[in-house]
Image 1 (cartoon, one colour):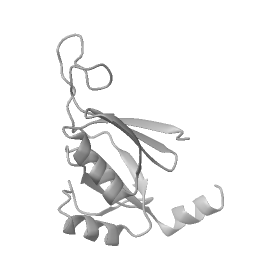
Image 2: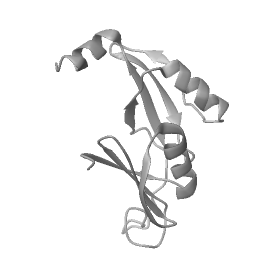
Image 3: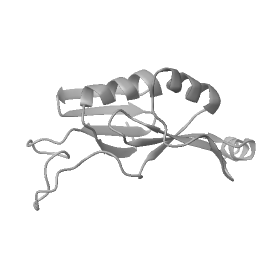
Image 4: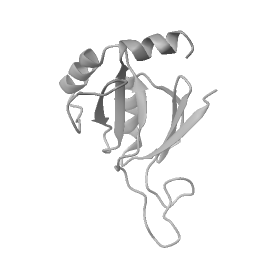
Length: 136
């Protein structure tokens, strides 16, 4: 069972499923309606909602504001070989917001799902990976 849950607003739930399952290793848990799906990857549950008049995460706010994809909030997926994954995703036409950057904990890049929501792909530095292996 997933322990962390994130909801993303997407324009096309089917395109988002294809991206997350086909490119980033998520598994589809349910897709009971065209405007909703639930996916998992490890301890992460990702719910996908398309703006709609139905109840749930895609419905308009009381003031009429309709949810839309994008923004800068994101979740990070830890990867073993960032360069190889970026190359694979670029070949598949995935858009990126930046080039790979190196920080104090490792290297990262922001990929965009088909709706433009950012997904941080993160490769920890050797020191960070060592800390994780030793339970620190």
